[in-house]
Image (cartoon, rainbow, N blue to C red; front, side, top):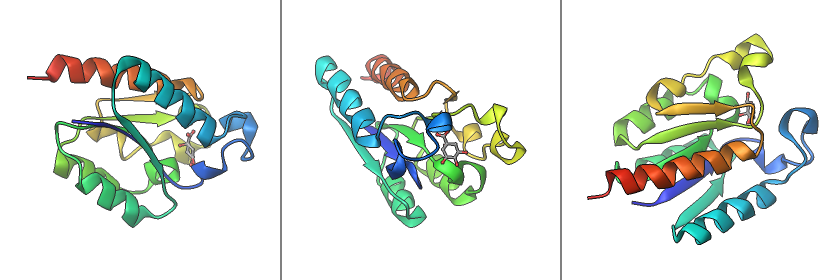
Length: 146
Ligand code: DQA
């Protein structure tokens, strides 16, 4: 099993995009820190981003219950039953991550159609949310390894 970090639409714009909501770090900087933590733990992690929902569905369909998915689905969080179905179909353990606190913003952001098929949700901790999710994923894989 491998740990995957998938980011959905518009997250390639991090650093430029509404820093008051999403912080000033770029996705490359966030991923660099994720890879540093992973290296230190001797763990193989791969980070990907896409603006195309079908790409994300294909990537998720290739996962198995032995993998672990850290996912920021961006606005698909609120809309994509297809994404939710893909996660439940492959039964991959998943954590949902949001940089901003989706419960403290516009009403449409408070609902996640993805959260019910995830172990949990981290929201509002900025880029640190990914790092905390990674630490959880590492511990989870140790715990469930046979
Ligand atoms: C986001 C929150 C979503 O509502 C928004 O559409 C995003 C980013 C976050 O990381 O805070 O694209 O997922």
